[in-house]
Image (cartoon, rainbow, N blue to C red):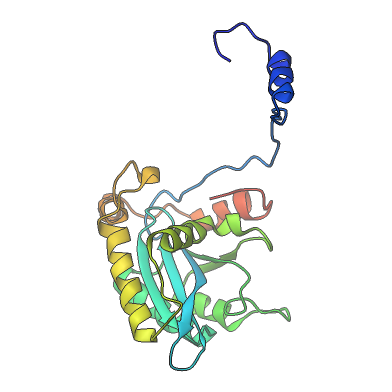
Length: 227
């Protein structure tokens, strides 16, 4: 009630008497948004379910690969078999086109995490590529927030059929990736497109020394940071 001279407690009493719930200041964890300073410093990966294969009845998923700095959609790979081998094959394609990132960031999905302890085949492949595999703390999807944000936008902006062929789903995702990268302006990027930011900043600078170790130590050990 700005300008009325009514105090906060009085305003609460008036609202309560009128049938409204008292105004309560909500408390929660403070999160800090973070983006890598250059393209291909960190690539974020995750699977998202997009529908059902009309031929086999199998669940259809898409592997999302996003550049952390620019939010550039590096690929959306559709499959009914989201295995480690499929992930490695897809990332081989991405890295052949755009180069190998300093880090690959994921959740604890079975495709890239050994549930029985020890190194996974994905970790071994990351070492072969020459990149560092980092993972968000368990039960903290906000720590892989770039992919979560992409998935939220995709669900809001595409009306996915409940059932379709894998080829049809792949065509839909290919069209959306093009729109997301080249047409749709992003508030977080100053209303530029991911392609603009990815290409411009790629041409401006090179990687910062030991950035992978610095960021992992600062952000991934506490589990209290959002992206």
